[in-house]
Image (tube, rainbow, N blue to C red; front, side, top):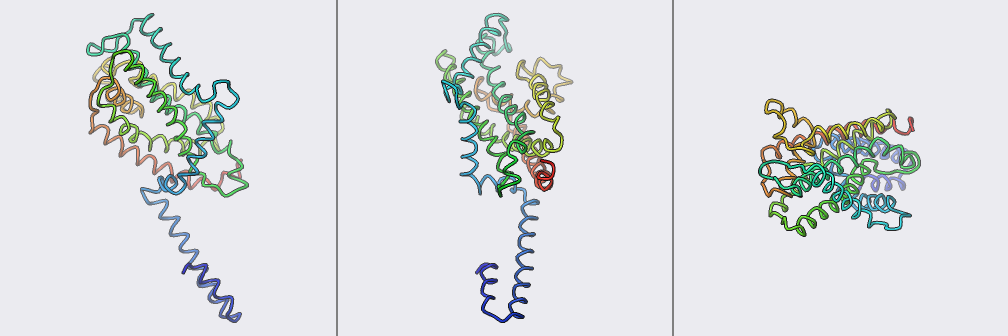
Length: 308
């Protein structure tokens, strides 16, 4: 029987016995809550408890965000297909026809350059969509903080889920155009979900961290637009990493987009197997970052209502 159920049984006893029993179970119940809260913070899997416990709610909120983004437009959700298709056409014209750019000796075709570029930009767009939205995430959902009991940590996962939908659409467009153009789809495309799974903890952690900081630092939202643009140019997305002098290539991996962009280009375009050592190290660091960010979010959430 639960503690609260046993507490209820004390109603039929006399006043002194009832008070003693209530006090005993109140202390046990408080200790249980404190133990669960502490375990939730120190447990390495704690950032993913919200995903498992509130999965249906997260899907519903992500679906609402996707629909609200296109609500009122004539094409509606079809814009999620038109946007990457139009961007791919622009890249093909500017870089393939005007600049006649080439990626490398092994990937020398103009269209190959466009596909490589698009594969990397999809990763940047996925991260940018989450990072640019995160600083205002709590502020825009102030009702969840003040008026109702809501698992605020779930907002991070719903933000990532909405961005994953757009990444899935953009990747589908890339593969469809690649197949229709005769370029073909490499077998390594089945490894692309593994690459994204290594990236998701970092993105979720970034949302937790930025959402918390955004409550107290309102200028962060404007700064993130600059940061995400800088990260794009400092990652091998618009150019191959071989263009960077060898003595400086190691510095490129400080950028969290570098390893994922390279692995995405390998699995979706060139048909190469990603460097599992690099990707495994990235996954460990990504999980550690999400855990630390989640702890920061949990410890600062108590002050959200006072600031908002």
